[in-house]
Image (cartoon, rainbow, N blue to C red; front, side, top):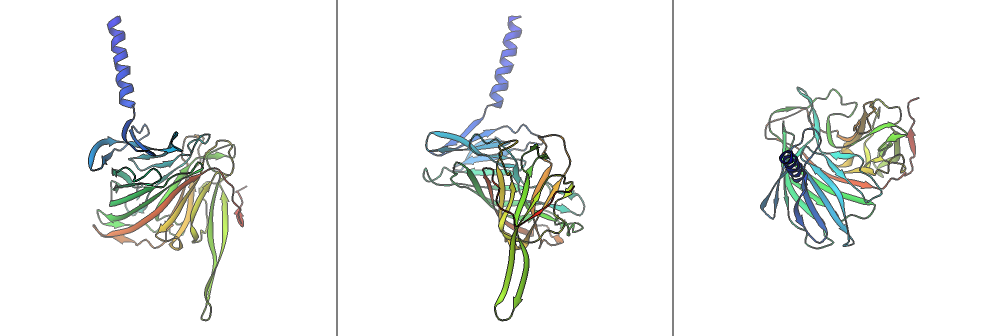
Length: 340
């Protein structure tokens, strides 16, 4: 009996050891740990620190040392492509971001880019951003070998990371344009969240500045009329916007308008490349009763995507800034009313 108990304790110890996070590096302000992605379809990230291999991990946890005394996690990066920002307590984790995906003529919606390699080096100073290089792939048709991520020094109510990369085709690609009117061809980047009802959700509203009208004359040039537009997620099934307009500025926001029912962050993507005036927003909602199911996807669609790309051809250069901040409720010049 004693031998059996010792064997069980040994197995438990081995399990705890296997699940323990592994410190990759520690600097005065930034800490990065390797961990195990417990979700579906984990994929490992090969990590190097100052050109020295540090192992392979399916999740990386990025921490920041606020005021030198308060170490808190600010990002989670998963090999399958999820980038989740986190804010200081009492906020709880909410939605997450993912990078480029597109609709393929033959295989349908291709999964967003996964992270395969990251190269870390400690920041130059305690108040410096942390800069990372790496590689991306969708394990099907697109690859990037020049990923750059800059993690800005966070504040207590805001975190952000600047992400840049160029995507090239690894085979001949046909982009499905049958959903061009719905603006669902090439999703530059997306935000995923949960919405079941006004009483059970992570985020509640989508907001952007839209181009309402453009008038041009030979004497004074072109004049653009803009306005803020919001759409609530209540009673939505399918596409959120019937006729989305071009972004009037960089930002597409997924708002959490108050701290109930969960104190989760507002999320936003700032589109810099392709430039925002070549991007239209869209969202899609799938009904669910599971509060852990990311059933809402919000993205920026690149309106200039070609119908086809050859093997080895550059597809798109991307620069986005992924943001999270505390729940907020900015004004809306116009709001799409929920479906009755």
